[in-house]
Image 1 (spheres, helix red, strand yellow):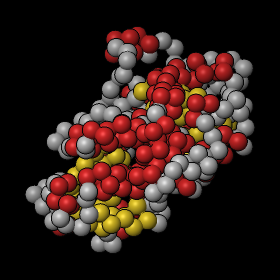
Image 2 (cartoon, helix red, strand yellow):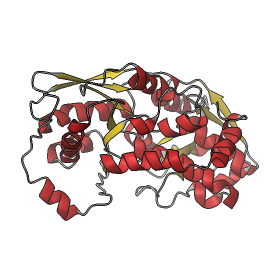
Image 3 (tube, one colour):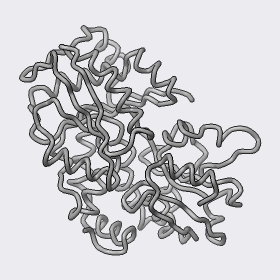
Length: 347
């Protein structure tokens, strides 16, 4: 798969100058030599969170003075909410414990405030290694070739549960476009949901394009494709899917604020963040280390071998995006989204 690198808000020339400097980055109050950094992910190791976290753990240490050991801990549950709650309330804020924030963390915070015991504005993003849209995919034998076909023909869609992208996107399509989509919840992770789709238990689902392109790239190749992308959601169109419509382009104007609000899913995930209360003086050096990692030839080469894209966003930009999404989300839009998706007000 084509590996793309997109630099946001800063020129490639500046990045080139930045990365010609010394690889090692000094952290101030935390000395990393001989230490172990633990990175928590809210999903299993078989999906893209596991793949990216292990990739980052192998390379990030090369750019931190002291070359610390970095290990990854899986803490699945509630679509990443369990791990994020842990990071906000239990995780030691000593600079040696990090989290790969779930892509739905902001959406969950606003739509399910009673279940989320965290505030993403209090975390500190070190950067995101990729941006990815959520892509709704159906088997070709479903008889659906475009989204409007589902106005008259029902499809059965699997998902990992309310709050996950595999639930949120088809649910929004169903309600906003009046489509005949039957949702079946309860699959444990993207790998099992996709396997169930292959085995015919359901006809489609919605995951980030990374999950599709890294797990089952062969589905979308050749004259007799097994499946096809029907719809995508995100801030921008995925560069691999320029002909696949964006949900925000086809819904009525009254729904566009909700779709834009949900677009936060694509930028946040597959990065690294410090928990609330972590030493602030180590942030600049760790962000610089992250920036150097995602521009490093060895990192990019391994990502390519593992079919993982590299489209990085700097930590300060990710954090601003998070803060703005929470601070500027109109209460009416949040209320409408919660009612539409969950059938009741935010809880």
